[in-house]
Length: 129
Image (cartoon, rainbow, N blue to C red):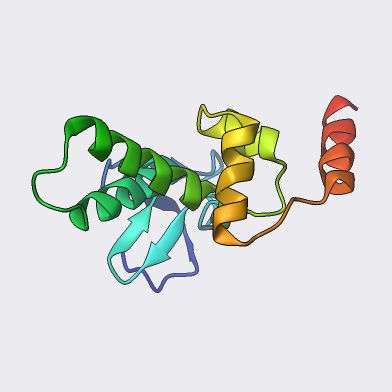
């Protein structure tokens, strides 16, 4: 599938091959958490994986396994924060199995400030309805 398509009957991740489509078979836009780049189309899980792998490509040679894991984890957290900075720290933490203080530290390191707590409250209350 071409990365330039705006709608398709079926979208497939170029990495894991998971596919999504409408049950009716209608054309639909790229799913919201997916991305389409010159390299292809990727689901959210693969986008996270690619962020971690990109960080590891820049790791110094001979880095310990523990340090590699920390570098990868940091890259995934940064990806999640920058992907949707309006989400609350708790929402991002749940999405990537981290803690809200860890997300707050990533925001601080990236100079993004805090998410709008009013937005987070509205999002939670609208989910309850």
